[in-house]
Image (cartoon, rainbow, N blue to C red; front, side, top):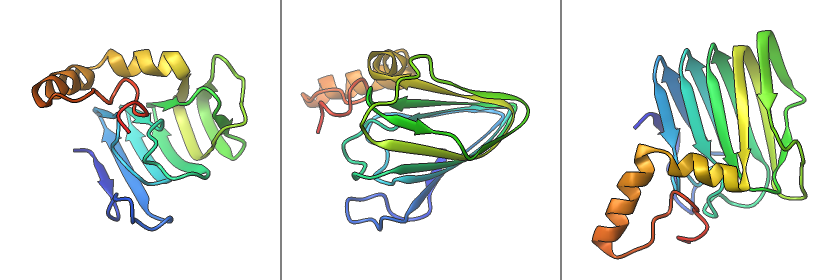
Amino acid sequence: MNATPTTATTADAPADAVTRVQAHYRNVKQLGHWTADRRFEVRARRGSVVLDLRSPQIPDGDIDIEVDLDHSMVKLLVPQDAQIDHWDLRYTGRGRVKDWTGEDGEGRRIRITGEIRHGEIRVHRGGVATLSAMFSREFVQDVRRARREGTEPTIADPARGA
């Protein structure tokens, strides 16, 4: 597993717990119910990171993501009504935040800070986020596990399994 939380990621974890995700020359996907933290540090060099932030196990309140990207891509899977705040993000060279809908709702605020050097952050909302999660090997493994255990898969829609 490439996510290394600095503290336990249980329901009784402190509110200031930080989950670190590192992707140097590789792809890292964290889908479904993978954390209960609201603060993240993402470092990537010539890699890609997918973070699923739709889980109801993440406590209410703002989500803070500090990025340090070098020729990398981060994809955020967020609820349809999420607010994306990237005002404090610094760019060196080419870099941008792609949010095709561009419509911030009244939902949870996701604040992105840090630096992007020749990289990008892609925001997938609602149904597009669901499709992004479904077109992964992790989803196929989740469906097989759910069938064996007689439960529901949680990667496509983490709120359904809660």
